[in-house]
Amino acid sequence: MKHRSGKSLIDQMNALHIPAGSFALWWLGQMGVAIKGPDQRMIYIDPFLVGPMASAQTDPTFLWGRAFAPPLRPEEVTNASLVICSHEHGDHTSGETLAGILGASPHARFVATGWAQGILDEARIPADRRLPMSTGITYDHGVLRVTYVPAAHYTVESDTQRGQRWVSMLLDWGTVALFHGGDTIVYDGYIAAVAALPQADVGILACNGSDAMRNALDIAGNMSPAEAAYVADALGWKTLIAGHNDLFASNRLPAGEVASQIERSAPDLAVHTFKPGELFFFQR
Image (cartoon, rainbow, N blue to C red; front, top):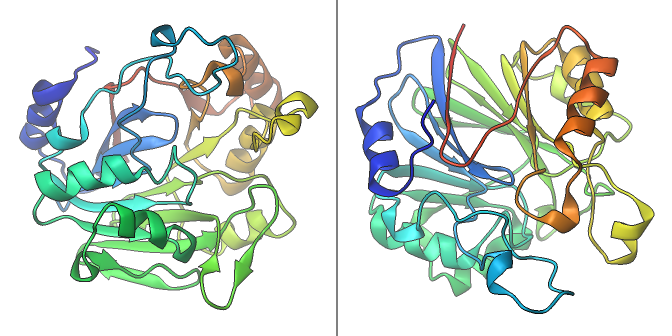
């Protein structure tokens, strides 16, 4: 399917009607997605739509150059209803991205952890456009209900003032459901916590793994592809979307290794990876 960008991508989102039991997802890179469910509202999760291309850098030690241009500029996101950020790392809660969406989508509301509120302050997100986020609570957004569970990037972290530092989330429209893991490893109790939620049809998990070299550079990793497949299989998901493995050359695995690990761990699992701006349509 054609990979769209800019106004063409926004036009495709706005024109597509989603029936009950279905959702559409557009891949934005890293763990960023735009989602349209049967309530016809656009949800953006972890959008990271700024940052230089690696080719623009001459410094060989520069770790965070993008491998591809973002499919949307923040100011082009004119259709957002809800923007959710799973944790405060800059590739998940991008102040410049949020500021652009704030101006372009006048009806958008923003959800982020207590640990990320300073970034929302810098983006000048007003209080009346922020919504709360706490784990163990299901938030009603009309047809859509969102529930957050603790994640661990590498450990489960929380405090009484800011709550959980890392979160995963279930988006449930009643007739179809999508799970977004944010950044996490498989900690003791994680699968049980997710299994206690309504059954997801599709799950998105960060599966770029981790290693000593990245840890030495203070680059926090995630599940291995084999672990992600194990989680998906244990939870009975129909489809796994393998994320967090495309944007930064310093923090990804070869695509063939991702595919082979998942194939060995869960050979019957449907797995998808995407190019930025690509549409994925799921129908139960």
